[in-house]
Length: 126
Length: 335
Length: 117
Image: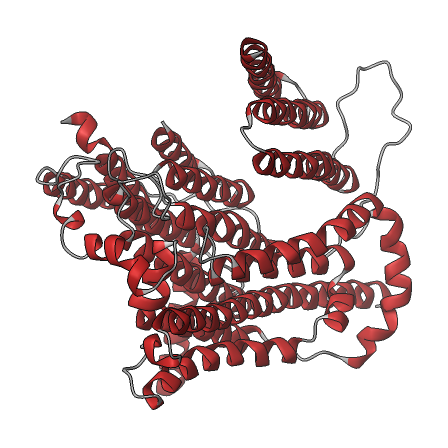
């Protein structure tokens, strides 16, 4: 059973590593990289499911009878391209956050936000 | 196995604090997963992952790190709660995989419903040897339309956040700038002048040959964009802006999406369903080929131009930051 | 004839993989960036070249042979250029090589030149 399900267990471990990076690290760019690791592990999961023992790539040729399943390939092609689109948007947001707040550490941004909230409340009371 | 390498790289990414090394490791991660996809017989997916994950993604992250800083701050508290959450979720997921069919078994449920119809009937209904292209471009063309619109939206988003207006006095400095760079990067300039036409030609080959081998619109668009990005990195952004007109590429990206949608509309106006290529011509095989050609062209146009727009805006932002720093230093020296 | 083809291609593949492995050991054991760069680029380019030559000997028809020749040309062109660019970037950004103590470093870089965007 270990060899049969080894791929899927490694995928789960990679997914959890990606999730851990997103939750526990404060730097925004590291979070984006963790999200990329998470996404790629899901791709590995789908492609492992599509493989058939003794099959070849799903391009029709005269001398093969068994092909790997092409449907997950299509889904993952779309997913890879959507992943790069969201990564590009996330990176441009990080650049703007850096300009606005001066840092990309989550704690410092939170502190500055709280500071602005307190100043606003003091300004309203005074 | 490759999966063990992936695990090692992922653990290294957690432990490292220097963001430059982390981005490089993320590029290696993308390349390793692309080779894993080749071993799993998914050649189209491997092509796309290698071009996108190990190429464009690493490049964009490097440009962003140049703007935001290299080092990550060390956290003072220990993330025990995060470890607990992750362990519980991982345990539950592994418990969920215990019911799955073994890796590679040919009688798993996913191989038995729609996939045999695609594999067996694709050659009569569509006439294209690459089954992935026939599913992507003809059976599931509507999903691919959504994907193209997502890329276009990402391009618009980056433009909305990062677009800068060019100052006309930048163009006067180009002459002296070019000569000073000429001695510094002579070898790379000559080699890339030899290579860039071939890269563009290869992108066109991948675009139009996607029916018969692995390839298609996405991979071709990314390869085309990377040739233009190579040119822009070597010869400076100002010269590249003169050669590659950014408004023209914004126009091309919109044209790509419109081309894709109008193929669907044309098939509806000719009496079939939306994206039904059989009605585009007298013979249904010719109609399918025509439809697939046009939509792959639309996809290639949009992907290439959006990648170029994203890179130019990121690099332009970095150029603006560098100019501001230079002016800051000059004002400091004067005062 | 068949035996000669098989043995020569096997020899080329073996030499190629040995070169790649020794290049990786060099990257781990050498003390400085520039020496590591040298180990990685020289052995990788030659190793990949030998593996491709081994495959060329085994190729069944002319089309595959032509494709392998193209890949070989590209590898020979791009590999050394990439390592040249890396070493040049390191030099221009001030990374000095580790020299033995009684050699006077006449080219010590004090200031860094502006980097290309």
